[in-house]
Length: 308
Ligand code: 13P
Image (cartoon, helix red, strand yellow):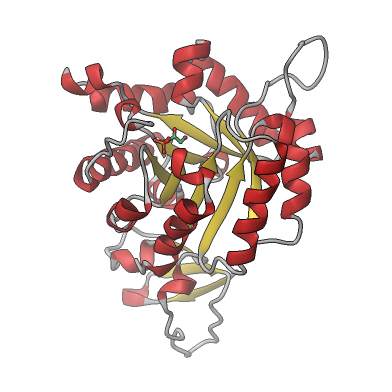
């Protein structure tokens, strides 16, 4: 961490990558550095958005209940053969829990991280059929998807359940991916903003700023999941920007600016570039297109090419 006095005498604190001595000007930065830089100001100050963009792209594949062991490992090998470096993009795959071990072993040494699709909040005990955070860590997981709309709709998970799981996941040092999104009926009734804000507020209740900054959100309009109907980039951006606005109120501007918000819902190679180019879309949670390397890798590559 270094501090220095910059524009108009405001004091800046900068982590990772900047080195300034008294009287020295900042070195020029390119976009690939920007997402690794945490930048805070001690006074409110208008700075170019570029300098506030502290977020790294994050592309994750949610395999849902698909593939068997051999096809899971084969897919990972195909991904690894073609993805030697992911540049400025975090990449993860989330296989079914029974294959986390095999997929994790196959991924070892690669740039692709491992994630789970669900977890139970209790540390251990008589919870037949459930899996704990410690077990996921033991298997090498970095991420856990929480509150996916399929879990909400089919298995009755509520915002309160998501919140309980979220607390456990953060305590265990895993990175949660919290899903929110409205149904078609809710969108048509004009209640998208109310629904998404409500899900965020209740699912994220009680988090410290530090915990919020470590939490990934995934906006997945239910009507766009597995339907081939993608939200338009403008529709998605509108909700992402509103979530960030909400986070500003619930936490503060620097937390709001640092939270990675993925979009999910029929993301494909041919719509990824336009979606990911939106200022508040920081990645994708990919379902169907993550089941084949030829449809997943172009999405990762699209993110790698975008300079925000
Ligand atoms: P699809 O990409 O198949 O629409 O699924 C999105 C999703 O639910 C990811 O979690």
